[in-house]
Every structure is written in C-alpha cells, then in structure tokens.
Image (cartoon, rainbow, N blue to C red; front, side, top):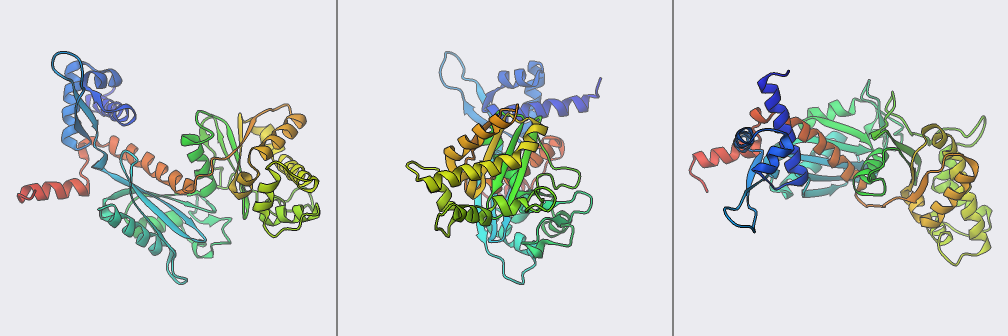
Length: 396
C-alpha cells in the first residue's frame, strides 16, 4: 500500500484530469471521479484551490434546494508553447493549461540569426500578445522537418535547414529559453493532431504518408507514436526503391509527380494543381492515367509497411495527398486491397493549416500537465507569484 502522501498525489491527479476533461464538476462528481470519500473530496478540492490549480466555477442551475458548487481547472495556473520551425519561418503559439490559445506570432529569422535566438524572439512576441512574459511559459515543444537523434540531440535528415545542423537542438533551446524543450518531427506531429481531432480519432494503428517537397511516413502502433531507435522512423525520402532504383522522394514528392504527369502527355508546371484536376470529375484520359499511375506508386511504397504493421487506417497527407482528394484515396485503397490481405481504410488527411504547431502545443501541454498535476503541493507559477505580490501591495 502506498504512503498517504503518494495516495493524495494520485487522487489529486485523478481529480485534475477529470476536471480538465469533463469539468466543471460538483464535489460529488469529483468524489466519484477520484474514488474518494466525501470528506476526502472536500479536502482534495481545498488543497487544489489553495495550490492554484482548481477554481470555483459558479453553481449548477436547476433543481430544488441549494445549488451545487462547481469546480474547474484554473486554466491560468500554467502555460505551454508550441512552435512550427520550417524553411519559411517560425510559427509560435502560447496556450493555457486548458489548451486555449492565447497569443501567436510568426517571424522570418534574419539570414545570419542564431536559430535558437530566433525561437526565443518568436516566443517572446507570442507571450507579449498573450499578455504574459516569456518566463510564464513552463514547457515548450518544437516541430521541425528532420529527426532528432535521442542519443546526441543532433537533427538528422535536415540538409534543407543547415542552420539547425551540428548541435544538440533540445539542449541548446532549453539553455536559451530556460525551460524544458521537446523537439519532434513535423510529420509525426501532424499524425498526432490527426489522432486527436482529425481522421485518426479513436484509431490505435495508423500510417500517415506525407507527400510534398519531400516524403515521410509516420506511424501510430498500439496507440503509441513511433519514433525509432535513432528517432528517424519514417524518414523515407532518401531510401532507394530497390538496388539501383530511384529514391522514394524523387518518385512521390513534387518533382516526381510533375515528371509523371508530363510522361502522360500533360503539359504542366504545377504538380499540385494537376493532381487536384486529376482527382476531380470530369477528367480526360491523360489525367485518368496519371491518377492511376500515381496511386500505383503510393501502393508500391506502402505495401511493405502496411503488411508489417497491419494498420486500420492509412492517411494521405501533404500537398499531394490533399490535392488527390477522395478519388486518389479510393484508387490507393482498391489497388492495395487487390494486392494485400491487409485491408486498411484509406483517407485524405484533414489538411489543417496549423497541424504541426497544434501537434507541438499538444505535446507541450501533455508534458506541462504531467509536471504540474504531479506537483500540486509545490506549484508556484510566475503568474501566481505576481498575483500574490500585487495582493500584498494592496493592488487591485
């Protein structure tokens, strides 16, 4: 049996997650959610209110007799930030403990600017727009096109962003920002976003094929996002398709799709527009042949991972996956089902503009909640410190 302090900690966590997911709740509902007695629930709520993690949220209307006091998570007890770092710039957002976005900022770093300092500049501006200080942010997650080696912290598969190469990315950002920082591959964050609010909700085994300027695969297996031993799971861009064969990225990324369209007699300089036209009705014989050939290339690439992982769902994402739409997804499904005994559903991605940034802030919030919900007795956020100082000075 655990110690009383350990049991209190577990009860506090159960109550806080119940308030976060289902609140506002009455004391009786918190009692049921945490599995504690009535006196213990009352003491638990007193403790969480004192710590600043829970707040009173009015009363439940209706019914006879006294209305039940409601409780909610204090969303402003702590803050997290998510950033999307790409070749074109840095996109940052700050969210409260409940996940509500409060302030955002997009910047383009100067050519000679230290990339970590550029991240700090974006985060500082986003905090200012949220009415906060950068020091109020307790956890940060960054989405980036590449794969961080967990042993060295070095970003691999990222020749297109040379300013981020050759150093421990997480350690450098943590040093500059002064808070814990997690760095994650951008396509994996897109799949994370799909699993929370997109096509993969409720799915435990999913593959996402991202096709744009490059290609990558992301996988959820048994409900867990897969990163691999070196953090490079799904980095297919430079993988040859057989001995002496073309690189996967040259076949399914934008240049390869453009060459394929031209090989079918389509005069075009825009692979995305051409694939979008091929996926729409009516289509001529050339666009029909191009669509079938492109679907065939996708299946050729996906056959092995689908047979290995047996996913329930395959998502086609990126500019090309979205451009092909439902018709491309249907062609891929039909060809895959004819080739393999495995028969996953195949769908087009949600296509959210901020999916990398949203996936990053989701990861930062997960870490933030784990941190503060595990340390309710020691919570003292900068925001709460300023509130205490102002109250002590008699300010309103």
